[in-house]
Amino acid sequence: MGDPLGAAPIRVLIVEDNRDICENIAEYLDKHSYVMDFAYDGISAMHLALTHPFDIIVLDLMLPGMDGLSFCRKLRADADAQIPILMLTARDTLDDKLEGFKAGADDYLVKPFALQELHARLQALYKRSHGKPASLLTVGDLTLNRSTLQVSRAGRQIDLTPAGMRLLQRLMEQAPSVVARDDLETLLWADERPDGDALRSHMYKLRQAVDRPFDSPLIHTVHRIGYRIAEDTP
Image (tube, rainbow, N blue to C red; front, top):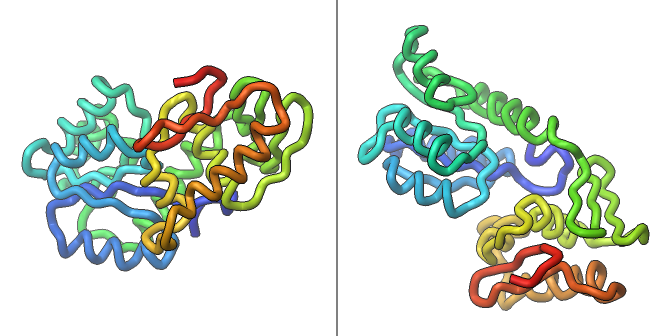
């Protein structure tokens, strides 16, 4: 199962230097419509975490380059990132767990673990992090209710295609930041992307619905990078 709203799969960064474990996780979670990226050391993981919009990070404690505790501290302190982190480790003492939570981990899973439990914990972390914030997204006079999937601008209701709804929700969640083309394409098609520039076609339709009937555009193209939604131009 993916997003509780049925709008998008859960995007997870798996940080684990044991490639056999990565393969097992990938094979199992792929059946449940997750979108996964992998890093095999802490430094590469930090780069991915800072440049891509992940819903959850699954983080091994013992990593080359930068260990899991250092990764947590740096991500929380330097980047002020609130991405939920599920820490994996063979250490199961209370002190080890408390150290992980102190560093910024949100949950703890001791190796060896059942893949069903990993899936259940990911679902719980996602619901916890996405269920509490206000369901209403607002950019200027545009609103999107994540609970009802109703979109309106200046009080006028806007009807969108399922693809348009996914794109708009991601843009509004990241506003006013730029969302990379690659991330939007992954959001719509995962690894099975169509030929041609299908994303441009979907963005054109989204703009026709969201911007064309109104005086000022909210959706902006950042050439060769992606798109952003904001009241101002880049």
